[in-house]
Image 1 (cartoon, rainbow, N blue to C red):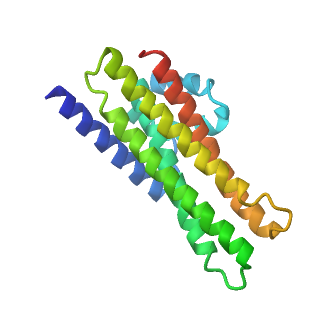
Image 2 (image 1 turned 30 degrees about the horizontal axis):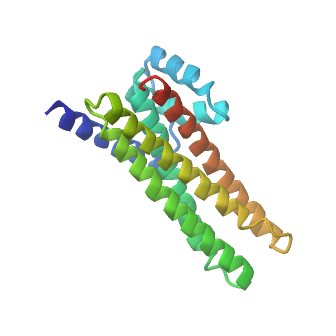
Length: 203
């Protein structure tokens, strides 16, 4: 029963984060728990892009509330929102008039990469929700699955950028998509670091 309630609460948390991320960039709300804010800042020091980490997560301080599992879920959910936005961006770009076949193919491949990344990130969040009262080898198995999914999602995003590595690509298109996807990959990289930190304390 407790496991079901935990899973339900985590799904509610995920949906709330997705809603907030889709309506506007989160900002620190009045009355945010200072201990939770400090917890986020401290946790973000272990990431590759700490400033990005703090910027994207501080607005969810009251949701996270010094909970490492919730921190990981919020970080992954923000990554899902950013990745979905990038996939939509690619779809619009593919419809631009005058786009050359080479660029069109690269954009389509990139969108496929981002769609795959969203799928893997969703699976990772669901896997975190399955932890419940898992212990021992069962707990390790779930955590390993989460790490595998997030790592694969990050690889998808990096592959998207690689699709535009050719010097023959339109430089304006390359710069626009590169900036969009690199920002997403930084958020996902940070999420992976937070997942790894959570994993190291629960093995």
